[in-house]
Image 1 (tube, rainbow, N blue to C red):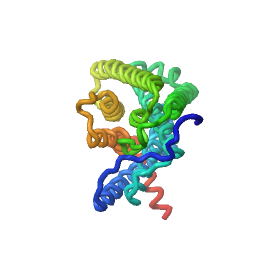
Image 2: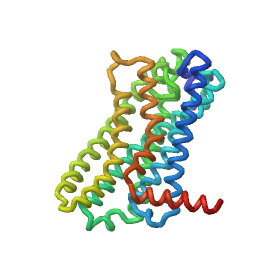
Image 3: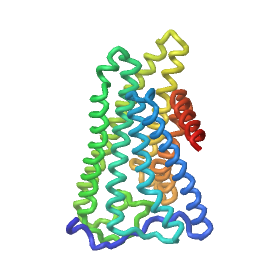
Image 4: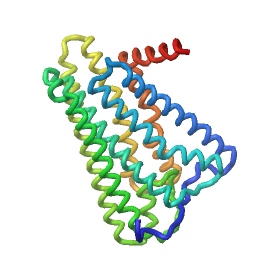
Length: 310
């Protein structure tokens, strides 16, 4: 991007100063990364291969699993490489795509979680209209809208951030290229436009969160009126995993961006960043498969098929 900066590389925040702790962080992140790839990969394969899972709920879950694989792959491999090779550097050409894909995938995730809340609302509160409101074409359009909104969000933030001149050094106080930390390096008053864009995105996230909360208030009211205990249990088993994923992602992300500066510190910022950028993609498959009998059955069937082929 022209006239953006004379900085050729950025220095990321190191997890530790000693070699032993750096290697420990590498091993820990490698384990989390492989677990995330395996868990989301299993969900992708199970949903794609089992025709009984070809429903709107699992279609959106497939999109979420694909999204989570990209989300964790955008930041963790570079952090592992830096720990392994005892370096903090990331090139300017490497930082810009990382910012873009982080904003793209994070924006898409909150949009997709909102769509999934709507899916649960229609399934439980308007079951007779489920087929008409969430047909295959409608599901494809909602998924495309979620991905498209994430793309536009990323384009806006990346263009704004990297069009600013940077003259406050090149040290980013985070383990990946994050927009607020890059903005701190700006020496131009025009950074206010990016701050405005960030506030706009936070408002959208808050709006999505309110929509999800209102949807689940209606869902739980409908569930509690169900006469059958088995029906209530089945409804809760499909709603609670999604609600847990939303709570983990939104609460940590909002705390990271809205916490007062008085309690901010490099170590706290690092922990919070790990909580909203690394933990959700790793634990989402576990959360969704823990209480979902259909998904468990599909995964067992998939494992059995693989064993017999060997």
